[in-house]
Length: 476
Image 1 (cartoon, helix red, strand yellow):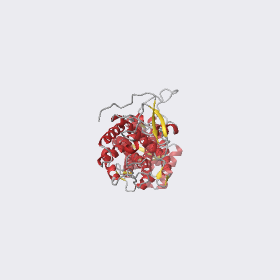
Image 2 (image 1 turned 120 degrees about the vertical axis):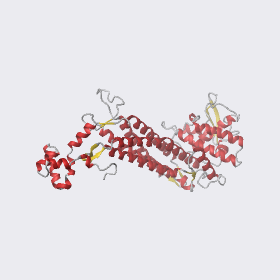
Image 3 (image 1 turned 135 degrees about the vertical axis):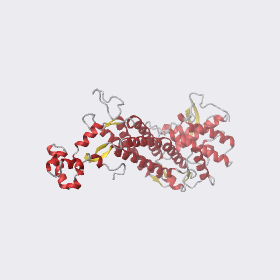
Image 4 (image 1 turned 90 degrees about the vertical axis):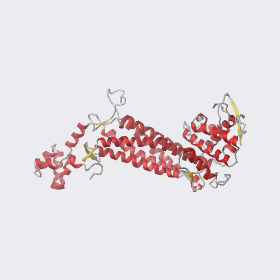
């Protein structure tokens, strides 16, 4: 195969054809008539199909070409050109040639044809042919051989989602969890006052509190990992309705194995192509797992911004990094912006998951035709969660410090330390002491000694915050 630089040295337009006739397309683009028609009919908003999907689709097209060539259905020279063009798609070198909008046909047919046309024309160029001629490489007969949009689009969805999870989201959430675990370990012996119902509660340690945050993330990671099981099952080979019509025997298993080898992931052929093409259940389960991560992250970010509130007129237990000025009018103001960004990301993810769930419920008979919105939302959610988690770790979590003076002050002032007296003097007497301290502005010790229930020495022996926090993470 000759080496030809990527690109078309042409201006104006050229004529491309499909079953509906001729269409003028930009002369410097590799796409063809069906792509151009989609751009005309579906120029809706600014939402374009994710580049991650087209790159994953390149893996599917390369795998199909290799399987077809190995079985003698595709000539070696055509296969080599298709494989080289697909490699360029996979690398991102042809990203500019995939311009379609999310709001298109729900099966993804136009995106599949966008891939077929770009790979066909690039392969024709590599083989010395005339771009747009469909010779010697035809977009349908050669690039799409043994395939349908109905089975390759969900296959590309699964490949793109697994790659996003493994290469982007999961490593960044793991890094955030480790950063929080490091804080938990460092602060395990710092006693603070707990809060339930937004009111004072019994003590725990800062490390125990942060260990809870880390565990939430670890649970979310486990759920995301578990959701990948369904993503590993590929619809490829089911063709139009799941029966595999036009695909040769064994094609399903062979293309799945080839995709697995190219992607380095344990993909297999879906055991039931009718479920794989009539539903998008695996994608909705992954989206739900991303929502679960968003719920956990929102709790963590909200806790941090409330614990850092102030610095003088709020809780002020945490000292977040000063990243940028917080006000155009109030000099010196600094805000918990990383926490706010995470909260907004989580709100967005929860909203997009609602759309995914609704779209996932719209499978009719042998096809779910809500695929573009689902892959767009899942990849978008994964991307913003990954980017947000990385920024949150780098610019907030890792630089967060404790205001130990304030933490100690709250512990010493808390009336809920009275809980330590309850097993000795009884709940009712302890409750009376707490109410007296609260309503008369006394310290807990002053109220307890005045009640006559305990002496000053007995109070000091019984009410020791450090003895009230259990042992490490066990809480017992």
